[in-house]
Length: 445
Ligand SMILES: [Zn+2]
Image (tube, rainbow, N blue to C red; front, top):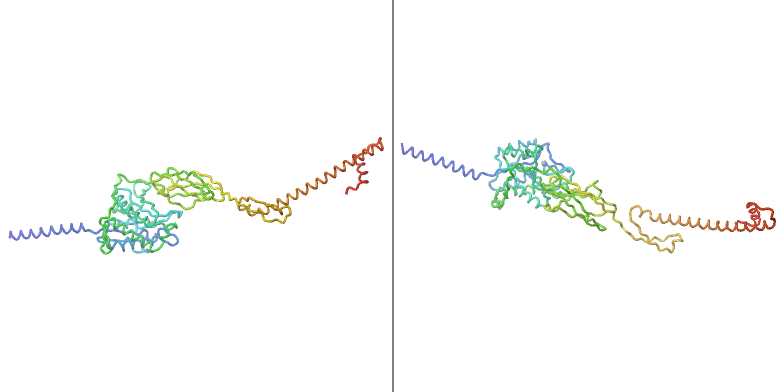
């Protein structure tokens, strides 16, 4: 019996340790569980620009992530929705589902739009504290590198707090903390600014999914025997956790100064000096009408440099140049205004032959200051000036003749008076009486 008991004990021990052993093996080899969350759904369509509906595009990208990521080993991929028609899951419901699946990470797939349709490029939103931040940021670094590699503008890795500054602004990142599942929000590109328009097609929406899958595979050091890819040694950046919840940039850039360096007949060469210490200057915008209207945003070229040279085309009207700079969170600061005068276009033209005799042989060079009005009326002006000059000349001649005739007449009157006085010393004639004598003798007409 003792022997039997010993054998029983031995069997029990072997069985027990096997269970522990296989369980630990199983634990060690546990698949990575990835939840892909196509943003919006049902009545919530997200952004919508010219029938580019974010809800539908998110699903195309999410399905492409699953298609590609499922080809990697040791990973399970789940979606929070499979169609565009079912009622939208609340953000919390998405995390309840992720929790049930024992998810290691939730990736929320989105596309962007801006209020004035001026912004363009990609961004990834991450949580603001602890391991949520470090994991999110480490993945976002890989993802942003891939997106900007496609030529998309880098809007950066960002975080945002709620109004009370005690939690995340975005529901997805808030519930990530509540359910202890790291998460990020990927805003792949904008659906409403033409500089992202190369990506507004189904092929590109799928391509984004493949890129996301690759970034996720790199982040989790996955390998794929079927794709013959090995990211097991991929160097994921170590991100240190902030010791407190990261606050966000909620102030405008500190300054924005515009100076005109020079200008020639076609362009003004200017320098913008601007700085934002919290984040960086991301875009700038130049108005040439004193700030009444602004054309599209331009990317600030070098985020580590506080100044940028710009070339502004001159116009045939005066320009009041003023610049706006925007930081990573679209807070903006406006510069001083600088005046640049209109371009003066000097055009030499030879007046056409005129029928007026006075101008027949005249070789007239007219310097015409070109503007819309003067170029239309200048021939008319020449005609008017000519006629006025002829009129004045005619009048001058007329008065000269009249003056000389009246002088001659006065002379004759005096002469006649002398004659009459000599004939009759006692009597003096009035001028009128003398005129009568003269008029009788002399025909003035
Ligand atoms: Zn969205």
